[in-house]
Image (tube, rainbow, N blue to C red; front, side, top):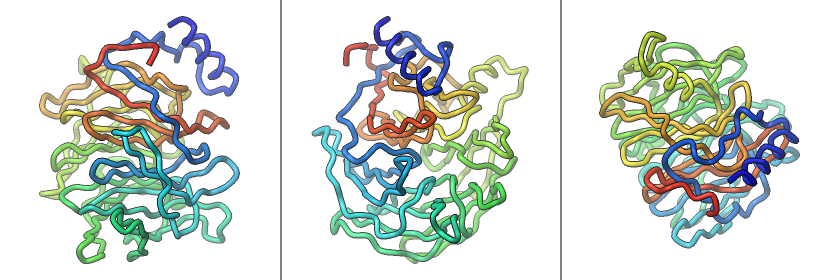
Length: 336
């Protein structure tokens, strides 16, 4: 355990990715992270991911030099990556992605090599045919570092940055290939926020606005198109746990057994702490094992078969190609 801590500390300090205070000894909470077979594309950050059936799909992003257009499918049952059809749009970072009605959707993003750097194009991926089809452009206009999620086979995209920090929300209907504006996020405008969906409700928090980290927490009901403020104030008993959980941007999120998890991301340094939220009791829990890879932001994340996954990302100039699974019910094992 000590050997792992020293190795991680040396890597973090070399790349200015975190401080000694950020390094855990691997026994700070329940649950276990397991390193899986490395992502087979080049290292990258600010990529996108979505899941369809038993598979996860990961692509786009940047290795620090180029904007990538490759796409890969991950099969957790075989711990195997397979390259799929190349994304036909321009390469980009900080795009959005979601899956709905058996298809994957990718759009918006940023590419500094273009005359107009911010993007609004939208694409559909058919996993059966392994093909991409361009759809109607995003209804909210160009942007990057937005959030996206899906509820009841409809996609939702909102917030982000287009030269102005944004707080709008739009719904995409795959059946009609149309966008409809919904009620905007209450509270501050933001980019690089985090979101997870439990039932018919999306939970949105964090991100940043004009360099400030945001610490509000909102629930969006797709059925009623309404927002509920779930933020805690400083006199609440769990305020410190709550603040540590959401006061970050470019974090990884996933859902396990109707609990939302937030891990990694960026605040004053790169983070590895992992927190969970239970909407049934409206409580936050800090008794979760910290991420065991190099702490990072701009990773992709997803849930499959009762496990959460975090992959790729960056720590300052260091980009990553590793992938880790998290099981909150498994005992910590420093050797897996």
